[in-house]
Amino acid sequence: MSETPILQLRGISKSFGSVQALADVDFEVRDGEVMALVGDNGAGKSTLIKCVAGIHSPDSGEILFEGKPVHISSPKDAGRLGIEVVYQDLALCDNLDVVQNMYLGREERDWLWRLKEPLMEQRTAETLRSLSVTTIRSIRQPVASLSGGQRQSVAVAKAVQWNSKVVILDEPTAALGVAQTRQVLELVKRLADQGLAVVLISHNLHDVFEVATRITVLRLGRDVGVYEREKTTQQEVVQAITAGIPTKVAGIPTTAPELAS
Amino acid sequence: MGPTRTLQLARRLITAPTVGPFIALVLTMVFFSLKTDRFFQAQNFSLVLQQVMIVGVLAIGQTLVILTAGIDLSVGTVMALGQVIMTKLAVANGVPVVPALLLGVLTCVGFGVLHGGLVTGVRLPPFIITLGTLNIAFALTHIISNDLTFTGLPKLELFWGRTFSISGTDFTYGVVLMLVLYALAWYGLNQTAWGRHVYATGDNREAARLTGINTNRVLLSVYTLAGLTYGIAAWLLIGRTQVGDPNAGQTTENLDSITAVVLGGTSLFGGRGTVIGTLIGALIVGVFRNGLTLIGVSVIYQYLVTGILVILAVSVDQFLHRRNG
Image (cartoon, rainbow over all chains, first blue to last red; front, side, top):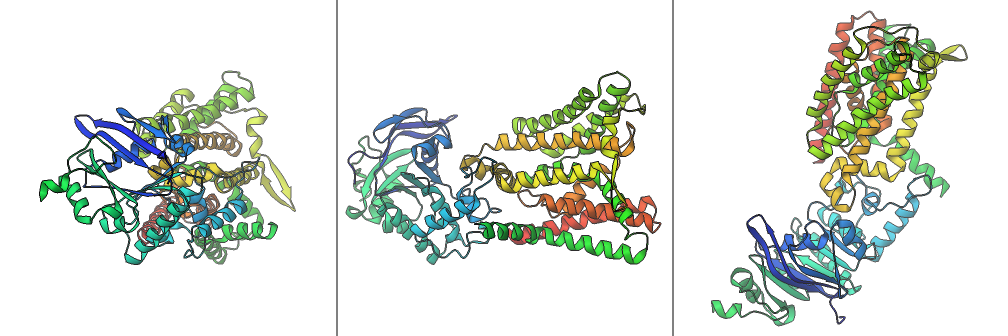
């Protein structure tokens, strides 16, 4: 793990009208770790991610990337920094094939504006191989014909192939069966092993405890603490999700468990 | 790389979406060949192509719009307006032929920009927007022309109706232009990033936007190019009829262009379809009208058949859409 977190959020607040979605939230992720972001529905996970992805702009607070303050105002900005988000249902276009999806919006073309299909096809195959995504029969089949796990794998591969440094996965296993979930979680682990910073948003604490290095808990738009996977239990995290008290000091677990016991 | 390229090309041309429409076209042709001797003749095919020319070019624009999950009900009347402007300016107002043609085309492009602007800016449904412009263009056509038909047109305006001969069969230059436009549309949709973005936007606008595609710019380009095809169709229409007729292009062209697109296998739900399919669809419509005329079926029954055809094709589309989820 490196010293400075690659991505660091400080005191992020965001309201929609009279609804305070995020209040003074701190968050960070380091190279080579899987940082889980958990919380109940409405805790502010998606809003936080959308602030990083350039979909929302925070009302206050700052975003540091590699230690330097940055301003992210569009998905393109995020992409330029090396931040990629894999959205739950909106990652791929069903009508396009695997290669077309992988290069969507960033197609390689020649001076006649013609797409360099063989090049993109070859690189797609390489990317998938490097991530050990081997179950896809043909990279020229439409993604509509892929299984849920394969689709997620393609979506993740699409996100990481642009030399990205931070990959944010929004509920990547939500719609998957047991075997498919395993496939995707293995992929998540491999990304961190390759040195990427991975943010995993999930409802499923089983999944979280299987792959996460650290866990950030959000509750009612505030962060209630960061837990090291190896020093915490599912019970403790559940307590934090349902009854955690916000702390101002990032990186220090709250006293939430004492509340309940 | 050469052989794989060729293989890819071959596979793309024959993959599922265009095979169905092609079989339908062949069956239609076999049917009419058995019904009448006058059908299967080079001169008759040349006639079918000339009859298909206008709807064929309009259907290119319609295909672009429908690929983005939109629809354009105004195609025929916008073309008619363009045609009236081209001919009236040249004949009644003494405008030189080139600016007259340009102004006609620009009017149609203007309608396309208007459609695109309303779809992206105000976020209105294309159906309602183009239902509105259908009436606006219809009214303007009659106001500007004063219900007069313009004759004695300059040669350049009639150019696309001129013919050349290949082994005794006459073809118009307009038919050649139509085929060139189809080739260009095919190139744009299949070989360029722009085309890919059109398909992506049509399938899932939000996903395309989150990927970083400027979907508003894609939609605006689609409606603008569609307007351009209506403008070109207006010029072709003058070549075909040899006059500027305010009543031309307003009866069957709207529905026929949609019928051609749908028969060609393009989904009304957006994101799926090919421009080659549309060409086949336009030929199916043309062959039906031609064949029914040859075997002496009255024009009114042709409307009946076209109506049934389009509903059948849309049903197939709906069925496939449900099956694919």
